[in-house]
Length: 251
Image 1 (cartoon, rainbow, N blue to C red):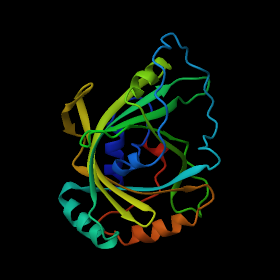
Image 2: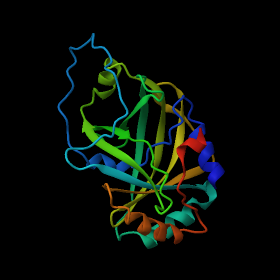
Image 3: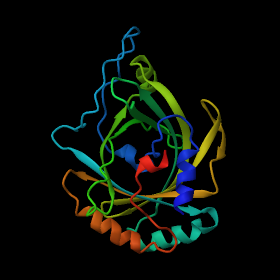
């Protein structure tokens, strides 16, 4: 199962080596709208970038994450199990287009931002997402932990990022299901490679499996949520094994 997850992540191309961000679908309901960026700044130079922690207002939000994968032929069994374990509501479906942008600064690793839009829900805003470096050191944590900022933006987000000096590294389409269990979110989705850059109608599956991600977004210091995540993940075995995966091992 772990090898399948690595195959899907590594096949996206580009130099970032980043794991595809979770929180598709319902994430667009979170965050706050920001004013449209000014289009007049055509000669704007890219500012120096430092990898400092990003905070949202006065609350530093963290994402707790477990990941795994399941073969196509086991998908229906997993969805049936999730319907029984999760909140009593119909799971949501989503079809999202995500573009990953890089900005090379003075540090060794480029600054990465993700622009995401819904392809099946008209009128929804674009979303800009930042994911910090994962904190893997504490063995008492049962989940990967990283800083997380997610905000809704105007539809000219990609133009603004290009004018700021970012370049697009890679793009993909994600299609899947979203389940809820209290504050936990479970996303089961397949990644599609875009064959013609910018043409989301020309796609093909990246692999014969689905990514499965269990996540919680909470203020910093709420490590107890990782215990609840581990207990929930145990109930999904042997259909899928959700693990604390270090993205650096996938590069």
